[in-house]
Length: 242
Image 1 (tube, helix red, strand yellow):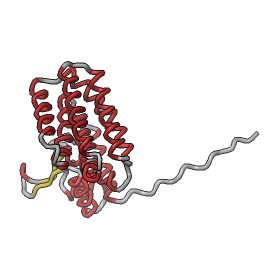
Image 2 (cartoon, one colour):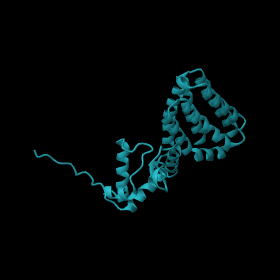
Image 3 (cartoon, helix red, strand yellow):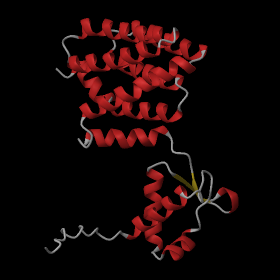
Image 4 (tube, rainbow, N blue to C red):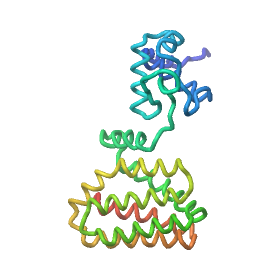
């Protein structure tokens, strides 16, 4: 019996010139040849090395600047050129916010990821939190108590609490990702806060949820903290999305 060959793999479209530059820079970063603070070759040299036009290099640099990966400065010597910079949380937040707004990441999927990530943060926070973390979390709960009539301020304090909880976990990636995820949901949540008819009953429960999470972190009850975080996010979303 003859061997039947499957259909040939779909041919990938060729890279555009600026994408070749992006791919080259990404390879250099991943290979460790362009660490944070390293300077990219001059535009002319980079274009010649990759075999593209200088316009393609400029387009790639603009893309990386928008993503917060490089910083360009005019000048000569140590003050000029394009350097690799640490990606800040703002760049990640912008990316997620746009994807959520465009429907690329449905809100229920964002909620699922938030629950998983924040449960991890809650467990780690129970092990690693310091007095300064507890003081900040407590101050945020108290601020929420006094801001129940201001839905926008309450929403911002809620965001800050969850980011502070991630910071108490001592994991920068968890903190940055939590901030980006929560920021991507800021406007959708605020819109639901504003239109819900259940606010007078909902807001005291939200305050109590945060107070209970803080207490679990204070007593270092990791499983309770993780469980409370998950139930808080699920129950609040059920009410707001109902």
